Length: 77
Image (cartoon, rainbow, N blue to C red; front, side, top):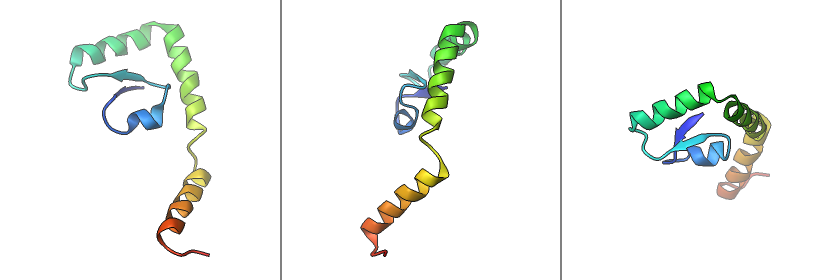
């Protein structure tokens, strides 16, 4: 995954992505796209990190965290 380092994507992706400084820099984006398609080692590393990172996101965890937040706002038994 290629993402900008602006916004919340860095929290979601952690070390499982390539970060670009300027999301409007077409040359930088194209360079990374080329590198990710041609460098099998980088591709493999990011693919594995992405799979590991994805394990942190599931509906059960989402429900638990949502309930925790709601308990802080509203009295829930």
